[in-house]
Amino acid sequence: KTIDTLGDLRGKRVLVRSDFNVPLDGTTITDDGRIRAALPTLQRLSDAGARVVVMAHLGRPKGSPDAKYSLAPVAARLGELLGQDVRLASDLVGPSARAAVEGLADGQVALLENVRFDARETSKVDAERAELAAELARLADAFVSDGFGVVHRKQASVYDVAQILPAGAGDLVLKEVESLSRATTDPQRPYAVVLGGSKVSDKLGVIANLLTKADRLLIGGGMVFTFLAAKGHSVGASLLEADQVDTVKGYLAQAEANGVEIVLPTDIVAADSFAADAPHTTVAADAIPDGKMGLDIGPDSARLFAAKLADARTIAWNGPMGVFEFDAFAGGTCAVAQGIIEATSAGAFSIVGGGDSAAAVRILGFDEEGFSHISTGGGASLELLEGKELPGLTVLAD
Ligand code: 3PG
Image (cartoon, rainbow, N blue to C red; front, top):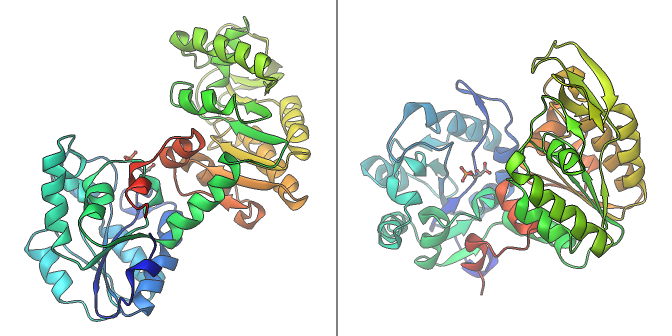
């Protein structure tokens, strides 16, 4: 179900779930990508004359109001981007929310305060979520689910409310699902996946699934050291999940059996400590000296990874290759981004998924247009790549 299936929305109150979980430095938004990604749906509803009531979460407050997680900075930025004042209700379903909704003229947009200030939003008890969903539903005539980053969450504002109001997927959710499906369903081959980020344990499901789908798996980031350890190499003082080494050995064996190529770095930029100005040197990936901490893949690995991407027809990338926030350890992530951009201009379909890799693309100054699709989802895009059914999507199925 989509916005189109909701019929004429002029004068109707439309409740929209967006994902405005943006990084903040105090009250300054450091990356407004998720707010910008929400604009097409909000603008479309506004243009259609709907009275738009947006709800979203920010961070993980403990189920009660916490000024640190207020959506006030988001309301201000959203207003600037939409070119209209966006009133922020000071509660979610209380008097302020009701007044904000009642005060809306056709085409106007209001924002409710952080849905996670109400403990029922994330409750595991169905009846508690249903109760909040019923209160939310009373504020509106229809529901549009457009927070792609949260569709993997069975939460009141994502899942339960869609069972009460006439509901449809927003344009961002549709675009995300369409793009990610190109990798998950019958990808054009070779299909190469670049995985990074700090922990193997965050990516177990996705790796297991990719070992049956992808042709090549390029591994970097903090998680690579658990792979190197599984191959019997010393990793010095690098991040290591010792309890995952056996699991990774199993992956390596399964990859060989399935004919999936696992591409590991051949060299590593290793530092004396975790700091932007830490003394560092490039060492062989199979012999990281004691006391040295790997913080990026090395220049040979960067060339190898770029070569493994060059002839790919489908590419998915999740997770940076190193500590890209520090200039000295950004080389691997830059090389992968550049390699994907070149493969894309040669005709590959490329997806950047996961909050960190999308942020890396922007922070390192790459042109977002160089990629076929940059997902706004972190966990949600990983779970789609993992082949899971996501509650926020199944609830919208016709
Ligand atoms: C995200 O940042 O990936 C989404 O906004 C979901 O946030 P959550 O992991 O706190 O549910």
